[in-house]
Image 1 (spheres, rainbow, N blue to C red):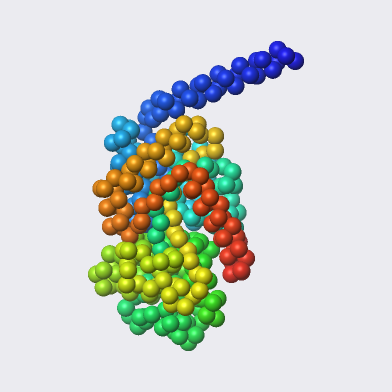
Image 2 (tube, rainbow, N blue to C red):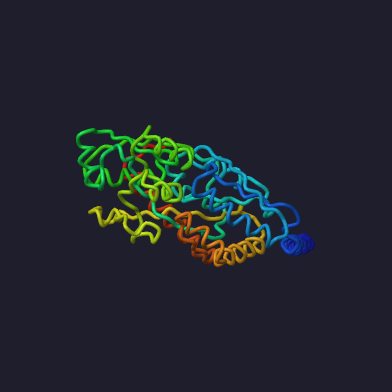
Length: 321
């Protein structure tokens, strides 16, 4: 028995030593950023800005691979099931916290993924095509009372935070609205600009250029206070929706079992990137507020939103898929 214990202890030491050595040599080849949504949306833009910076820092290429579908679940699950060696890294949104309450998942994000660092935060904005003839949230309320089931586009799937924001507002004012889900913000914005659908609830990155060009109106934004990128757009709370606050965040995750030294280095280097003037400017130009912070802070956010979205799915009577 003592001999077996000694062997087990020796194996643990050898394993720990090998993991530390692997972390010190990392990365020895290109790294993949798996983005859980298509190109052109907020998540993709943020991932590419950080990937470009880290490619220079690491001396290894950081490749962005879009693996979208099932409201981000395909990408989320692909990384959770990948080898925990630091070469497959997830870049995703708060769908990591909301999806388990709406979709049947083959993994548990809270157990199978390790939060590394928050990239950014941005409001979810309600946008209208000018031809709809609305200028305020109150106008939308009045129109929806005349046209029950008024449709709105989202750049994410059924029950995602972009949808929850509008459904939460709709419940508060006693109207019925219908979500039209798209695979990503880039796809949703195309139909919104063309007027094929007249309302959209999206992260601000794909919306702001069209808002500044006057081809879209922004009626409300979902954060506690107004984003400096769109300071003239009222929050939902300012429009009378007390307590309606949703931050859409983007962050980095690695598979559970990834050597802590690799996760720690990723946090350090991404943190430095988010403090770089060029990177910060790129984020702000895309209507995202760069955040950073410690892994512990990001873990806390992911868990708090997990609990928040569980409550909203229940209160808004969103049916799991």
